[in-house]
Image (cartoon, rainbow, N blue to C red; front, side, top):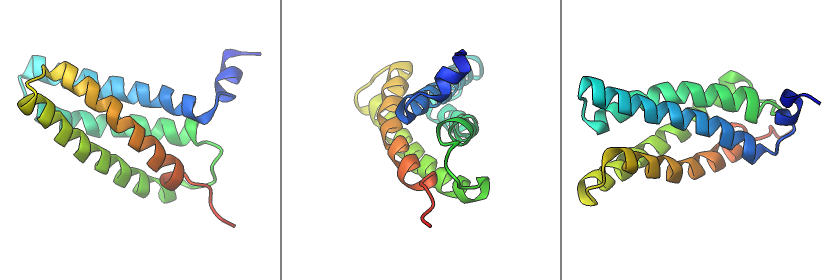
Length: 135
């Protein structure tokens, strides 16, 4: 059995974790890159990072995690974007609280927030964006 066959047979939460981990890593690295090289405010960098990570996340979730679901790209991208946008609003709010109220350094604050928000994104994706179509 190949590694690809093993990965395909993973339970959905593990697939979501893999894709989400990749998207979160992309998000995190873009924030670091924009803050450290362009000296952007971390909250502004977070917006750009979200947009790139959304593409990574949606593509991975559609093609890998929820590949067995029958929803088309057109049917799933709208709900997934709304879930992601809601998650991003929570992300930006929690990130600003961590930065300005708790005075955490931005890499640690972002890391914590990305983990917290991922849980909500999983359930929204599973039960709405990629939910099995009722027949």
